[in-house]
Amino acid sequence: MMRISRRQTLKMGAAALLASGVWPGTLAADDAATNGDFTFIVVNDLHYFDEKCAPFFHRAFKQMKETEGEPEFCLVVGDLTENGRKDQLAAARDLIAELKMPTHVVVGNHDYVQASDRANYEALFPKTINYSFEHRGWQFIGLDTTQGVQGSNTTIQKPTFDWLTDNLPKLDKKKSTIVFTHFPLGWLLPSVPQNANEFLDQFKEFDLKAVYSGHFHSTTVRTRGDTILTTNRCCSFHHGNHDGTKEKGYFVCRVKDGAITREFVEVKPV
Image (cartoon, rainbow, N blue to C red; front, side):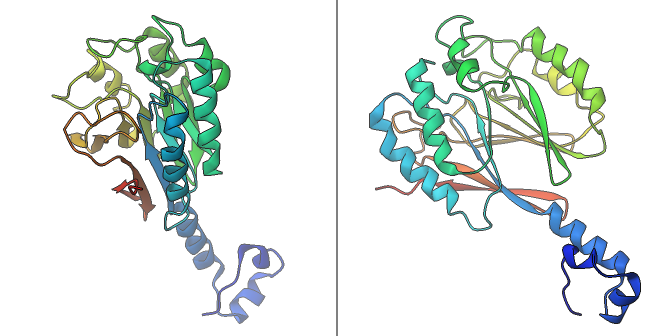
């Protein structure tokens, strides 16, 4: 069967398509399957500190760009910086721009200057506290699970629950959905917010495929019903992994035929 692009079909009637060996309904189905398959990156805990970190990130982002399958966007799940200083956040923003692909970030506890002060983050990464976007028929929801600079014994704060109350009814519960947020949400993991279960209950009627988190620098996998909840090793120049592993890297995630897979990729040493 000859291959005909969607643009070409706009110029051809059904009779012409049939003469070409293409049934219009079949073509639509093929296009839908193609549009639904994509690759994306998930990276966490960059902890940018100073210019000594830059060579590592130049290498890491170059490697991400060259991923097989041409990733279409990147999720950065918190702790972009070490101290939330304006110069650190500006440097992280400029380095992330080297990816030359859409990038969606969420705030981490290290992106605060102190207590509840995240003004620098909100100035340099505006409208990235609680938000959603769609990509090829999938829903992605970026959420704030921080409580200031606290790293443990935290609770997810009321503004995030308020956002969920106001916005989840506007989303399609039947669409494949992914949540990305900084704090881990799986059971029996360090630093899980005390109200993590209440938070996850907000999605019980959704087709929630996966939750990607950072904070705990380790590869962990938990399940909650049909949902996979994961954390990953950090992608930081000067921070280590909490599980003692040496590799720094990121996830390459691939969506194909409605299913999602992930693969840890190490940033190649110098």
